[in-house]
Amino acid sequence: MSLSRRRFLSLASAACLIAPAATAHAFQWQGTAMGARARIILDHPEAERITERALAEISRLEDIFSLYRDTSEIARLNADGQLQAPSFELLECLSIARHAHQLSEARFDPTVQPLWRLLAKAYGAGRAADAAEIADARAKIGFDRVSFDTGKIILSAGQQLTLNGIAQGYIADRVALLMRAEGISDVLVDTGEIVAMGAPKGQAAWPVTIVGEVKARALSGRAMATSAPFGTRLSAEGQIGHILDPRGAAPHITNIRQVTVSAKSAAFADAISTGLCVVRDANEARRLLRDHNDAVLESVQTTT
Figure (cartoon, rainbow, N blue to C red):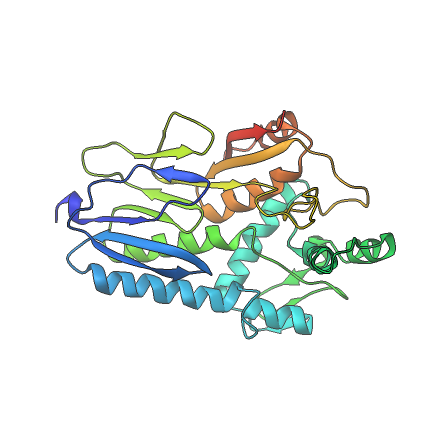
């Protein structure tokens, strides 16, 4: 099978623009995946079957990670404070999250969900949360107080998890794994975070351009994730973005506009880029990753 028949592409995310290979004769699907518009372009003799498998896998993983599906594993965990016999995928994602939590010095913390819910509800009602409400929500934050193993996940009193800062990357990793199982060696998977395997025909790597930059980067055998703290704003004034600092009670000041990280897995790159959105400045981001080979700071864009 020629290389031109072993390529998988998806629509580029808002953060990264992918220069596509020729797709004139490729199978194309458009629809919704993970609550967002998506497109799959696959040049393969069994493209329709493989695409159906990829979409089924995405849906299956949403049944684990989605906060918007009442019967998902994470929704049941948040409602009950514990979950018996969690899936392998949830445990694996939590293990990656633990590593990212440690590397980021607790800047990435999935237990930030109670604070996020409080602020989103308050600003949605046209008011600011008061200091006592914020202090109560912050007291519930602490990923080191979450215990998990193959038998059970247990949250501390009042805790809730969000894996929105890692699950998109994890799903990209799982879809890439599915493509490998189908014998597709040259593949670019983008679920908002990118996994690049092999290269387009005639090229050495996948050219990926980060928004705000001009020159494309060569990506192959690696994943890349971009996070922006103010991609969505919770407050009407725009002062509070959707990525919150889980540490301390004081408002956090940062001049970070966008962070891009590469790593072996999209899940880890996703989590680290999320955590780096709440550093003080680019120098602090570089310090955190200076001695770690498994996560590379590709780009930091600031407001100043």
